[in-house]
Image (cartoon, rainbow, N blue to C red; front, side):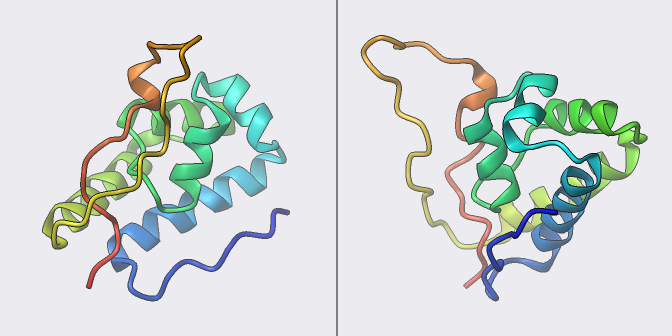
Length: 123
């Protein structure tokens, strides 16, 4: 099992619930971040952001995770919806850019783009 960084205490509880569920699914899958990325089509950096509560995962990423783990995506999508509400109701606080394209890669998948300019952390 992975050793996860402790989530910040000020993290919205709705977001915490989603992230804990994602971490459990990832751990129970037995896959590394790189393997998970390869099987879902989302980059390792994206999964690090999602599992570290630094970015709200898109619904499609959760559906891909559920598929890889043999889970029904319905619960994950519902948790995401609730977490997104927690994300929207927190005060404005921009995320640090999580991905800046290199000159060799000026374009990247929308899957790797930041989901919003809000932080998951409540004040």
